[in-house]
Structure formats: structure tokens, C-alpha cells
Image (tube, rainbow, N blue to C red):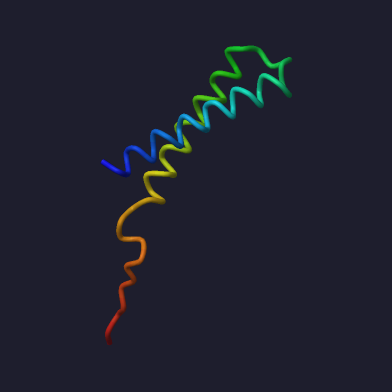
Amino acid sequence: MKRAIYVIITMIIVSVLATWVLGKYHSEVPFQTRMLITAGGVLLSGILTIFMSRKDVGHVETKLK
């Protein structure tokens, strides 16, 4: 549950910042393209947040010979 909250918060922050930056600095890009870029960034950030916030990050397997 905690992980889902972090994922959603990250996705919201990315969507707001991407929309703002694309609107302010790249206003010549068509609106539909800006929304596709924003959606791609939101999905990518959500997927990366899911994988980066796994619980077994500190787990290191040692191979015994």
C-alpha cells in the first residue's frame, strides 16, 4: 500500500512538471504531442518507481563454492 502511494505521488509530480515545462518552453509543439510526451513520462516514472522501491533492494546473494 505504501509503495502505491509513492508511485502515484511521483506520477502526479512528473505530470505537473512535464506539463509546465512543455507549456512554458516548448509551446510551439502541438498540444496532442505534448500530452503524449507527458503520458510517456508519467508511465515511465511510475514503472521506475515501482522497480526502485522494491523491498529486497538490500538483499545480496552470496554464492558458496
